[in-house]
Length: 75
Image (tube, rainbow, N blue to C red):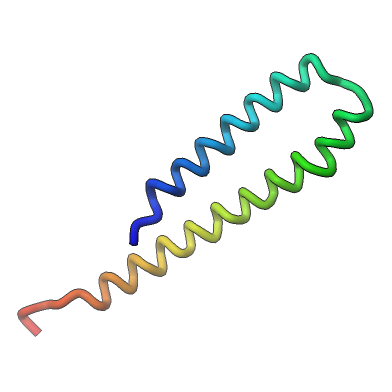
């Protein structure tokens, strides 16, 4: 199982969404936008960042498992 490519796609999507949100904020600057940012955008960004950290940890765990479980004909 390889996580690297999918992790990269998720990170790219996060960056794209952040860029588009920044563009929207240039035109949309009222109380509703601020509420939406506080209730939806900020928690989503936090959750995705937490997910990316978890995937990074899984990448490390699975790399270690793979390395430890590899067949070594010299053993």
